Length: 141
Image (cartoon, rainbow, N blue to C red; front, side, top):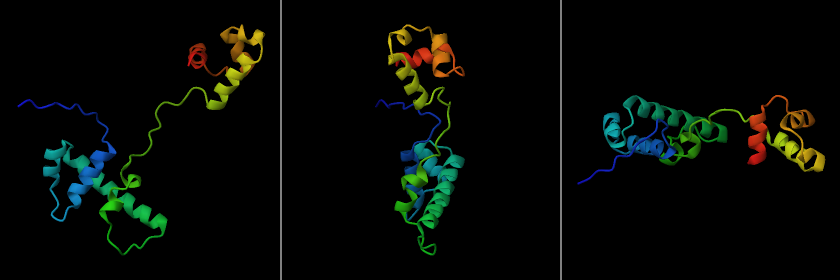
């Protein structure tokens, strides 16, 4: 039998997080070692996901004004607010949407602005903080 090799990135998806929480929340929970064998996610990572899911579920219940005496349900634990990782900052956009709109409006204004060089467009639109390549890529897209 041929087995497919699925290459996984380092990022753990919300679906994988939900699987870990569900497997640990069963009436007879699986050990983190068994979860590692089933999912391929390291034991320490699975444990961290479980602890964060519990912490996030309690925070969500507290924010919603829920009863803190009741035990957490599986639905609360696998809720997207509990499992989704924090948004990543990543690389910032060089131009905001307003700056892009200003650039395009300036170019469409008249024939003279349509024939401007990139350096002149920088001055005209006040975009001296970005390079020629950024302005060019914005206009092409």
